[in-house]
Amino acid sequence: MNFQPKTIRTFIGAKNYSESREFYRALGFEEVILDEKMCLFKVTDDLGFYLQDYWVKKWVHNSMIFLEVDDIEKCAEDLLSKGLHHKYKYVRFTEIKSFPWGRELFMHDPSGVLWHFCEFNR
Image (tube, rainbow, N blue to C red):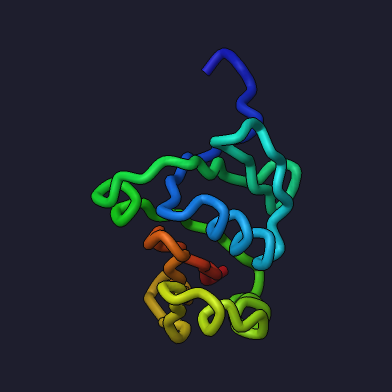
């Protein structure tokens, strides 16, 4: 490349846009409203994704986001302590799973987007 990339972000849809926005704010993401149908959710200044008020079941149910973390145990503790899997009907978490390359837990958001939270072996 003859240029310096700065960020890379994915777009995901939402079955219930207001519920998904509430969910991601409750997870601890910072919301930046871009217009009435789309917002940016940031973990840091450089890490985030776009949430759209747009629903296509096959697309959303096949969407995945991978977030590398420094400590999967702390991540799991933080995510589960929020109790969001009790508040939102379709939100669910797995136990931490071990793989040859690292450890990971999975989360489904209210619309069915699959999140991978991972700590790589170093």
